[in-house]
Amino acid sequence: MNTQVKTTKLAKMAMLVAVSIVLVALIHFPIFPAVAFLEYDPADIPILIGTFAFGPVAGILLTVVTSVLQGVTVSAASGAYGIIMHVIATATLVLVAGTIYRKEKTKKHAIIALAAGTLAMGLMMIAANMIVTPFFMGVTREVVWSLMPFIFLFNLLKAGINSVVTFLLYKRISPFLHR
Image 1 (cartoon, one colour):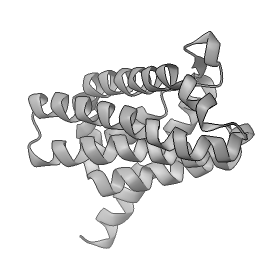
Image 2 (image 1 turned 180 degrees about the vertical axis):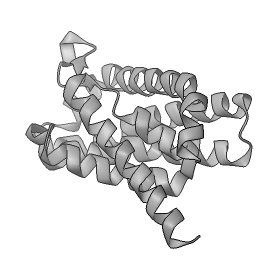
Image 3 (image 1 turned 60 degrees about the horizontal axis):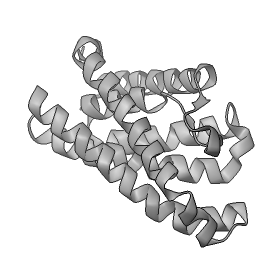
């Protein structure tokens, strides 16, 4: 890959990071009033689009850069905890979805990839919340476990909504990303 192609790809990835941060700044709201700290945001849509366009490694890079920049700007209140949880959740989603989609870039495989990524994110966040949340939030694992139905459903809904939107947008956006 020559320098111009690498630079162009890097610029497109930076644009996706910027769009992701703007989206989370503009759109974020709780889904379940009982656990208002769990807020839906569409930040993963540009990351998933970048993953489908450039592969799962690029998706992980987009995830880390977006999570850190978002965590020190528009979501600074959540601090290191927010950054860590965003990296774990979104990295799981993009790694699974990107790996499956990379093998065969069809609509059918996109649906399978996004569904598998959504389920993987939901399951991974059970473990992540049981390990990370007590440490950062100063609560017992029992408290976290009591919230697990909300946490699991929230992650499935968030990843599911972002996956559906990605599915609907990707083919319209991909020609620009591959130019």
